[in-house]
Each structure stands twice: as structure tokens, then as C-alpha cells.
Length: 323
Ligand code: SF4
Image (spheres, rainbow, N blue to C red):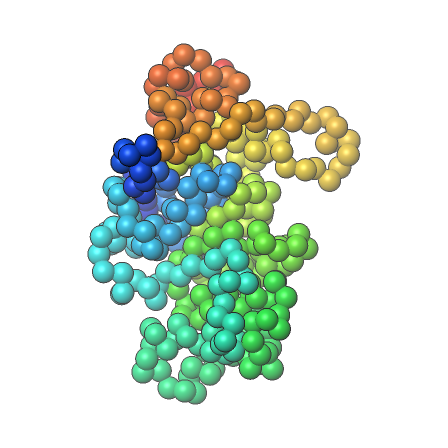
């Protein structure tokens, strides 16, 4: 596969944050050796419970945090430590909270036009206006709403404005950090369908971050499951939902509500017991061993290597073959 097939590659990415604990300097290992790729024009879903490090990955890719180790390759270029200015117009991020991510003193037209002013300062007023109008229509809003302020919109409409702001400069790659988590379920579906339509039309690749596996299923070609800063399993979306191999993925999937009561009654529910360990002092072996019902001595001593079990299905577990 040529390098151009991937818009983004993470290689052993690590992001640690220094903290003081009992006068000792320690590190919160938010991301600890994560590797995966995103193909051009496709969506990768990144899932896991709160605090597993998925948002830190998104922010590290955008270089809002500097990585502690590993490499970030964007379109074949190593951007781990370089000046990000030339890449800002090619990669954008949408944040979870559509209430705090929009400046309340700016009109919608100014919010959506701001990235054009920064990235294309010599763009003519007419072209700027046309680009803003085109983008506003693409996200399902209309020209009369350009002069309004964010507080005049619902949560779903605000997220449409955030998406228009990120897409107006036509980036090739976008990090969508829990873009629908703060919205009602019916609005979530509308926003996800809109993102899929926009992707088909404009060809961007997305890294779609969510804590809910049900949300990423519809939009993602591939899913990466994370726990405590580590990748547990990677597979094509439909295969992962049909044949999850890692005990953590199995537990996450079993918690998804099923609309059919007969199927729901017949389904075995896995309940995760125990607490998520501290990322300052993660377990010595497999990071999931304190909550895994299949854990053995080897799990508590040795971290499992992530292994390709065929067809690009990757699993990090000593015992997945026996489960
Ligand atoms: Fe569970 Fe052991 Fe597999 Fe970790 S390596 S998920 S503790 S069985």
C-alpha cells in the first residue's frame, strides 16, 4: 500500500502529563503506545469509556498537546514536532460542546468566515461570502441565519455551525471529538447522516471519537477500541460488531440497548466490575486485568502485544482464542 492511501498514521504515540503525587514527580499516561491508520476519505471510530485517552489522541494529532513519544504521520509527512502552520488548513477539529465552542459575541457569518480570514487572508469579499453561503447550505442552515448569534440556535443547529466552521476551508482530515454526545438521540442521527453526506460530497477522512459504540457503528468503516491509554482491538466496523474478540469490546457491545425485547431478553449482558485503574499507576501486565473475568497470572505479569488475527483484525489479549 503506497503512503498516499493513508491520510494519517499514528506510530507508538505516547502523551504523558506530569503530576506531583506525595512530592514525587509522576506521569498521567493518557496515551501509551497507540498505533493505527486512517485511510483517505474514510471514517475511523475511536471508542472507549471516559478517561481512556481518546480525546487526548485527537488533541495530540492536532498538536494542541505535544506528544511524549512516537510519531504522527500526516499525508506522508512526519508532523510530530514540526511547525503546524502549513497543516492547519488541511486538518480541523470539531469539539463536543456546541455551547462553549462558539464565541457568543460573533454572528454565524463571522464564525464560519473566521477560518477563511486566517488561512486565506487575500480571499476577495465576494468569494468569502460565496464560500460561507455554500457551507451554511451544506450543513442545512440558510442565509438568513448568517446575521444571528449562537444563543439563538438549538444544540443541534450550533453543532451544524461548528461543523460548517471546520469544513469551510475544505480540510482533508477532521477530528470529530464526541460531536453528538451532548445532543438528543434524534438530533444525533441527523448530524451523523449529515456528516456522512458531507464526506461523500467532499471526500474528507474523519476520526470520529465517541464513548458509545452504537454511535460510531453507522458512520465508521473501521473501529479502534481503547482502554486506559492502550488499543484493545481494531477491526472493520461490521466485523467488530459481529465478532468482538477482546473481553473489553464484548462488554462494551453487550451494554448497547437492543430495540427488540425478544432479542434483548435472549442476550447475555456482560457487566464490567471494578473501577478503571489510575493512569498514573496502571496495572503492570494487561491494563484491563483488574476488571477482566478471564484474567490469569500471565495477564497480571505481561502486557499482551497487539496481534493481527487475520484480515486486519487486531487484538491485544493473551487468551482471546480460549474465550
Ligand atoms: Fe483479560 Fe488477560 Fe485478555 Fe487482558 S490479556 S483482556 S486480562 S484475558
